[in-house]
Image (cartoon, rainbow, N blue to C red; front, top):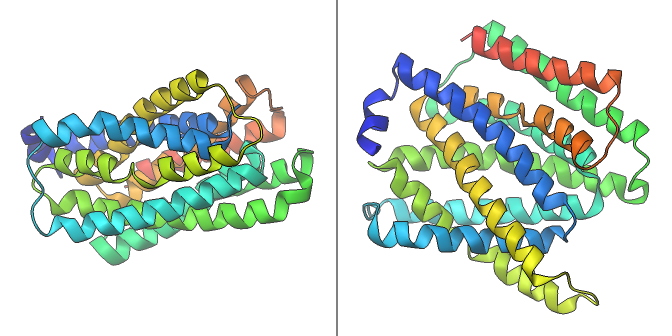
Length: 300
């Protein structure tokens, strides 16, 4: 599998696969966000998810993938720090704001900075048509966020802190997207990076979740939380693995932008499963997001 991935890097076949992987990551990321914002406390859910995917990654680290090269350890340290800060900001944002308010702001903040970061780090450039697509997509995402802020009468007292945390979270999404893309390209076998990432990334949040658990007056059922953790871990493995493989196969900026169609999927999930209202204005904004992604892809 690893040899095949290496063989199609930079080819037309690799580009097509990267497109499919980025869109799969978008859908799964929206599912992942809904899982974290759902019935259980976001801190506890994130802790259960991270513990689950750490245990899933352990046998791959020990018995399947090659050992990382020496130069990878500083990279893994940077990955751990960036992702830990990102998850802390995300959990704080979800604690204070509604899913459909927080999620579009997070996802709308990240693609522009990810494209800029990919240009600085990897020398990637977007065509004028692709920049137009980015602008259309951002108009849809931020329009959706503004609509939700104006018309959804939920968490109004904590709205401003939630929005500030959402913007900060989006900046860290862009940071980890570009830094992780650097990491997965720095090792000979991309699956080595993915396996070690999920093991190393699993240490911080479970410890914080246990601490929060002990401070709660009423704790949720362990079985339900554990099940959500396992489901979320599987989603995270495929979501993050898909977007990282897409950045290895093709351009980082394009993959990052296409992943932000997750806002479109998030709106559908919020409507169907979280019983949040979707009207004609929101449908139009969702269509803008999809159009922007199409323009980015067509303009490449």
